[in-house]
Length: 435
Image (spheres, rainbow, N blue to C red):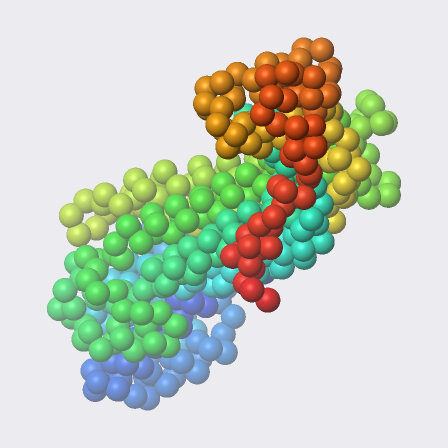
């Protein structure tokens, strides 16, 4: 985790203090479940919970013990025994380290996802507000980077809203899939611990029971989780890239907010650069970079190895912290985005009405002209606009083959901009609901 791209609430989830607190809760709940089953004394379970709950776990002390034991869970249990006293011998009965580690990771990822879902809600609200603000602001649509037909800036944002709404649904599904608990003992057979302990811990920790674990929770769950984060990152990049293009000097239809006192370049005082969306592009690359290691973690040896462990110690914090920061940054960009309708209009008019070419083509076919001939007639007039800077409507009216089928009035009617926006309300209703 890099402080520059981290926010405190998400960072706190991955702190050693939080991790050890979760470890304690897992162990204490398991001990209580064992006490309820008559395996360990109720008094011991009570003392473990009371003393552990009141304690502040000493991270430095646990690290000191681990330097000798070379085992993080044993180091924690040793420190817990220092706090609890003799009753600590009833802790971790029938459990294996992965029961603690994997269940803890599930809790951390679930909590992290709750933050990401809140981030997504804030982003969706910002996009929705700006989409309705510019619902009918005309701008040119582009395919291959070339002018195509008119859209509205609101439609661009409606598309982004729908995409992030899907991302939110995927995140919610990923949370449900990752939030499982395994307290099944060595190789997952429950030989030394009752399955009811697992169910009890799962309920207390807000998780569901893993149907079958080997000694670890199956890593296909984690692969799907991090793949989902990668898709969200790609959607962030898509919108960031659109904004970066729109801020180019030659386009200049939208721009990141440039605050008082902000500097764009150490050398050129005039610069106003899309630094936030460029940063988002880079952050998206990093989140996606964590997907492949998560996929490769699926194929563990037999019932368990720890080749996944080092990977997850890195990608768990880094992926969620980075995506949290990126979602918050994108929300700020959208919320303060400077939008220039006049420049959109100027750009749309640069090609002398060429964006109406399809409508003329279709009108000619409706008049009985073959599609091939209609295309030829429209294209030869369109090329004069590209090559000579002519006006498209003027050229069409001067073309005898065209006017043999379409009158000047009919041609002029095909240059009515409102035609392109007939179904904007329909699209908005599909995206945002009828209200």
